[in-house]
Image (tube, rainbow, N blue to C red; front, top):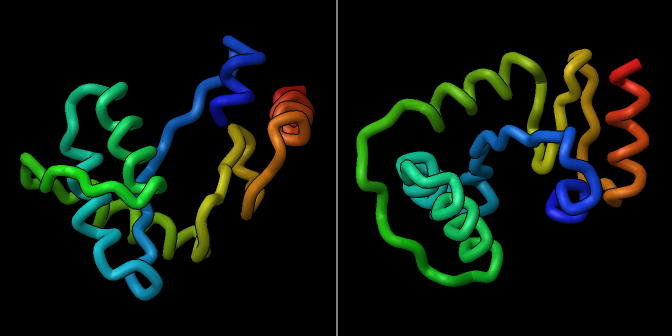
Length: 110
């Protein structure tokens, strides 16, 4: 995503935290902590820290956002991450290279 954003300022990503608790037991608490962060920059830094296997502070709020995202994912049949949902409702699952992702976004926008 960073590479896409560095190349295109007309593309935006909206991240939803969908912890795969069966694979990562601490993922729910970490997701909630990220969602509770008010600063987008700090939330992204926390997400990067999680990927780098660094510790992050606990959640600072009570929220149902993570549960709502999990219910939405179940309703849509999304069971893995990453999953990209395009503006037309179509999806791409798994890692996608930046160049390919830009092509897909451009195709969906037509």
